[in-house]
Length: 116
Image (cartoon, rainbow, N blue to C red; front, side):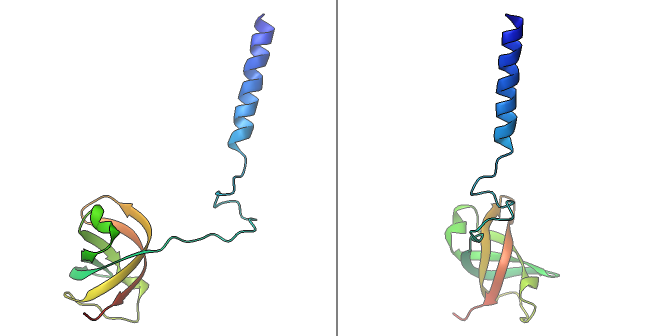
């Protein structure tokens, strides 16, 4: 009885371990995937209220991100061709990831001045 119980346990353990190592179509680390990774791009508009080095705090005026908060930390260095100032209206593009803090933190993809 003990041998069959042990054999069953080993079989379940082997199946569990082998299942954890399989590549799935959504695995971004697969490397040899025939399909290109699609990058999520989400945007919002707002006004720069603070600048600290290469970063800024933007007060959000429009965008889905408002559901999480109204102040967002933005990396201005993604657009080194532009000079930003407090009061500038901007459009910010990010990858959809929002870190819940104050101000909210995002992975900035692009930022540009907009004229109102």
